[in-house]
Amino acid sequence: MTTLTKQQRDPAGRAARSKTGNTGSTRKKSRTHRMGDLRIAMVFIFPAMIGFVAFFLIPTIRGVYLSFTEYSILGDPTWIGIKNYTAIFADELFWNAMSVTLQYVALNIGFQTVIALGLALLMHRVAKSTFIRGALLLPFLVANVIVALLWFWMLDYQLGIVNEIISWLGGPRIAFFGSEQWAIPTIAFVNVWRHMGYTALLIFAGLQSIPSHVYEVASLDGASPTRTFWSITMPLLRPVLVLVLVVTVIGSFQVFDTVAVTTAGGPINASRVIQMYIYQKAFTESDFGYASALSVILFVILALVAFVQMKFLKGNESDLD
Amino acid sequence: MTTSTPSRRDPAAPARTAIIIKPRKPFNWRRAGAWTLVTIALIVTIAPFLWMLRTALSSNHSLAANAGNLLPADFSWGAFKRVLGLQTPEEAIAEGGSGAAINFWWYLRSSIIVSTLVTAGQVFFSSMAAYAFSRLRWPGREKVFALFLATMMVPPIFTALPNFLMIKNLGLLNTYAGIILPFLFMTPFAIFFLRQFFMSMSREVEEAAMLDGASKFRIFFKIVLPNAGAPMATLALLTFIGTWNEYFWPLLVGQDESVRVLTVGLGVFKSQSPQGAPDWSGLMAATLIAALPVLILFIAFGKKVVNSIGFSGIK
Image: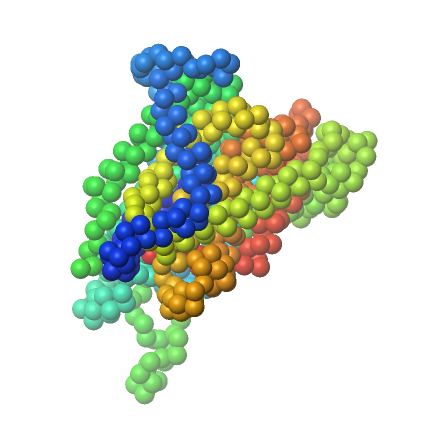
């Protein structure tokens, strides 16, 4: 999940910059040598190309193919058309997984974005020190598994410090990971804790790109801080916020590690998120065709989510011009 | 959020404000409120790690009676000894461990092997590709690059299933090669990251070398790479941390004890605990040691990581 986050962050910005930076010189030379450095480029690109074709391109195509087959590892995949898909739409566990995942995403992204925005504003206004930023980033650098185990202990029903504090305050102990109603909010919270500093840093980078003269003009006009925030900061931050949202929502949909280590999808089906369901279909039930169809659906959902967010929140337009 | 007194002046010194136009940092409620929030955020972030340490330094049996005590309950190095295999099974069981051998050193070794090889391979091969995508001119370059870019949109789970089948068909399940191969040659992100940097490098030295008849290989190894130390180090750091923390892929292909990495091992360690009373001290000691390399790297190069978020980020 984390590597994906890093990967998906900035294709738009990079591609745009690369074009402006390079067209001039490319055009100049390629007229004289049409093939340019083709041969030498092939050598340079060869190892990466092997990795790309073998582990990214072919698997992507094969994944789509497998989703139309019945395949249990043993033997060969048999083509069954769209049967996997029709089965999925009638599969209650699939709908349950979708609903659980959506609850998780809503809780995770809702809290995470608001907290991260607050933290980013604080860092921007008062606490610019690298030390503070570093400290807030710490949970993100520690493995999901470790974070999950740490909170599994801290939120333990019997001995966990959190329940200890709750009962000290006079409240009833809560089975955070063990009850159906708490499992998803708890997992969402654990990942808010892990990601809030990182998300705040992304937003912070965006805040720093807002030119200071805009603020100066606002303060000369006597705008209140609240008004400055809603009329200047938010609109100018919008493209960055949209990108951050696209990236974090996509990552959030693929939650797995925390669930796998703490609840394994339980109690009953309460935390069986979609990626957990795919994992179980493929590796516990050996139903690779069905699992592939599920991941095609996840892929489509993620693409739609990204598209809708970019489109309706106008992520690629800035209000600065 | 902190909507308190808007007055910037110090009400206590009205006489001075007439002379000194800018009063020397008066007490500012908004600032104080902001710093309070920053402090709370820092405590919320750091305290769980201290709790991890506190638990690891406690005796497992004493945890129950001292659940709310902020200091280690019945201070002991036992948990660390247990995890590192320095206790006999009898001692371990007496202190609340499972008594089963945990090959922690072996997991650590696997994690180091996997993370180091992936980092070295990925950064090097990606830098070669990034060079071809930025400084060499060849037909179809932008199209091939766009194709690389497009696969960044594919969620890892999607390629994980077919990749698992391929690794299985190659007979590489439960081998280091199986865990490493998919990430050894490139990730689209690594190529982007370096391509971006290569494009901003000055061409002058390169062109001078070219006039002197240096080959592209010579230029790449003698001029481009030495000048790309900073971004390559940042990328290596990010790749290492990412690989060290990876759970899903090694869980699929590296379940076997002989190649099990730390993250997978920790998951197993949890389920290995005897029924009723998990070995929390041991578990926290293990997670602490597993997080240590990342913590050390972060303390040493933290600035680089923090700044790379801005660099590789949206801006």
